Image (cartoon, rainbow, N blue to C red; front, side, top):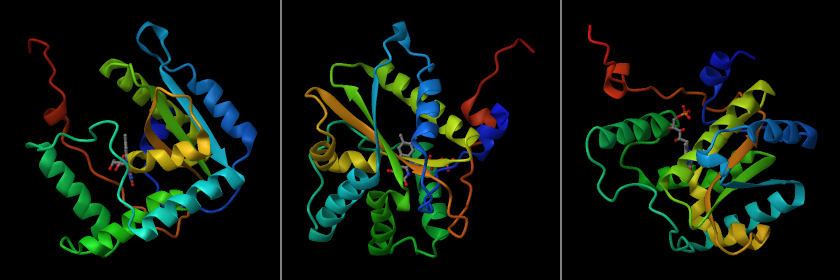
Length: 222
Ligand SMILES: Cc1cc2nc3c(=O)[nH]c(=O)nc-3n(C[C@H](O)[C@H](O)[C@H](O)COP(=O)(O)O)c2cc1C
């Protein structure tokens, strides 16, 4: 698959079939993704890949917490600025309208939005998931390295006919994830990533993007 095609066809997919994702495919993807760049080649990510009974156990535990109305774990990092200024605020609200509008959920129906969001903790039905941890001591550039790693993983998954959805939502249940994975002390869960074959009967809306001149400035003297 051409790189452009991988980039264009990657979307946050939120509906997967239960078709098995072979271990050798995941190993191929993650071996190639290890080539991702990082400042001073620190490779500051650590990925856990869950399938089968351990993933089922994690989904079960998260689902139980959700059903009990258990509050989120104390955050280990700020997901967004407390006040989102323009143009980010408008982009976020456009995203919400698109995501929930496609599911027929009204803007002010918070309960329905929450119900739809709860599919996060079932990995949207995916049979495989990756959890990306970062050492607590790392600085902002290393978090960006982890982002590049995750994007490389997602593009390689496309080359294998697979789809994905990155999920910070899992950081809200980082203790439950840690109970199943037992990561060493000193790691912070950045996000999860659902991985699998797309359920094409589910919503397949593509998100938009800001026009190029909102996010790129060419300085060429012309
Ligand atoms: C770091 C990161 C965290 C995300 N967390 C979630 C999440 O918790 N749940 C979810 O449904 N989507 C999540 N997304 C997906 C974004 O909503 C999605 O990438 C964005 O709306 C753009 O849409 P697209 O990926 O389909 O192009 C996340 C994406 C990134 C990069």
